[in-house]
Image 1 (cartoon, rainbow, N blue to C red):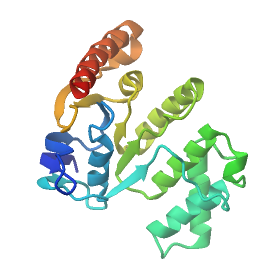
Image 2 (image 1 turned 45 degrees about the horizontal axis):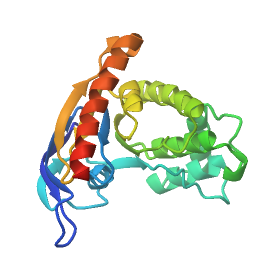
Image 3 (image 1 turned 180 degrees about the vertical axis):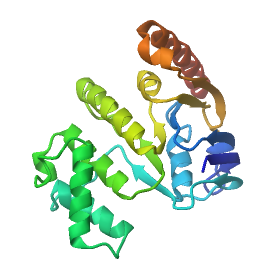
Image 4 (image 1 turned 60 degrees about the vertical axis):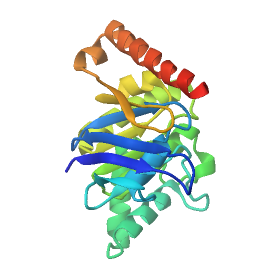
Length: 243
């Protein structure tokens, strides 16, 4: 089912609204990138979609099984192996599952993120990019149609980030997940998203959106033009926020 946000608003206590009149529809299987100035409510919006926060006003529809969430920090349990971190997520998702079935599924997920040979390593033995791959596999272990990603690659170097872009795109196509991906990086948004949504500065609302076509993916010039257009619009929002 699609994710539908209708006139969604959020304020904390008596403060000014963080989100106001947010309207968007994200189709099943769609990859949407969410951009906006710092503090515009992007993470708050993800938290609402995940059920971690309640909206103050408006309504939303999300898949009945909820959402899986991937954060900027891998947040792996250091005393568990890569496989153990994934198996724990599988156990929490299905308490009736057997140890053998969890091990088999964890092996499949490790292979999916190209970490088949690293299952017995602990987090401190893995690079930052490898830890994020484990975190992605752990999110997929929850077997939710909706995957929410809050700047998951922001702390990585450019080369590792580009490699993980390729991996995430491949996994998205293989699994058919609906993905909402928060980023500050316009290039990243154009590289990954089928659609890019821009939130205004506080209060956050969707003020612009762009479709990313296959031509943008295959023509560097067209991709650069779109990146420039979005960057200029984002800068307008940042300047407005600074006033």
